[in-house]
Amino acid sequence: MFEIGNSLREARVRQGLDFSQAEQATKVRAKYLRALEDEQFDVLPAQTFVKGFLRTYADYLGLDGRLYVDEYKLRFSPEEVDEPPLWARRTRVRPTEKHRRFERSVVLLAVVGIMIATALIIAAWKFGGGGQLHYANLAPARPPAAHRSRLANLLVAARKGRNSLLEVHAGSATGRLLFHGTLESLERQRFIERRIWMNIGAPDNITMRLNGRKVSVGGATPRVLIITATQIRPAAPGT
Image (cartoon, rainbow, N blue to C red; front, side, top):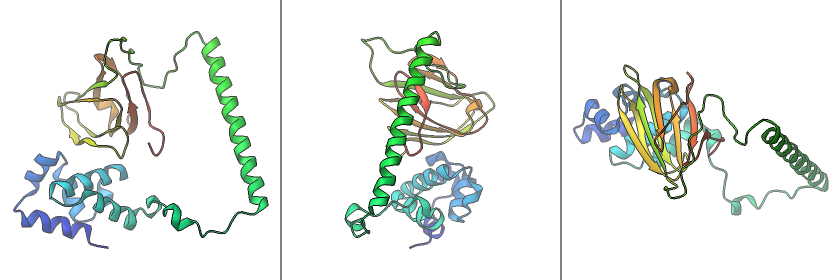
């Protein structure tokens, strides 16, 4: 265990860097960088941004960002600590026959629920006058023609006079970091990936174009989305 804030501060001071330089390089506001060094994590807008900002800042200072995120989760969010590996869990007491029957019942109910949900979706598709499902406040993107790339070409821009926190990864929340910081007024960022994971702090403050077509997210609360060449959908927990 180590002091997150003090080690970040020592690394910055040792390199002769000030907060303005760090802000320009990481795209993370100086007040948030200062909060990380003071371990005032409640100042940051959300836990997802705490981990992203922490990894970005540590990597910028030449430290191991993943190590700092693990330390943060261990000390401040222990429920997110990964379960022990399979070899460490084999010593658990074997379930009784009663537990096995209960588990089989749960699985059976889950299968029945999936079948019912599937039937309702098919019925909605058949009798609802179309074959495309729509999410609230999400405008569907036009599927690309057969000769086009299957990559999602996403352009994100902040509206004039507005800004939004933005975190973007390739594939999933644990994938390669593409952008992490504040998208300032009229600033644009383009991402071209097969699958994009995006956390938007203020959806109303941005506009997006997917493969040349304008799409609308909307909403005053943060949203986490999965974006491909053919669709934009809310991200399931843990993806």
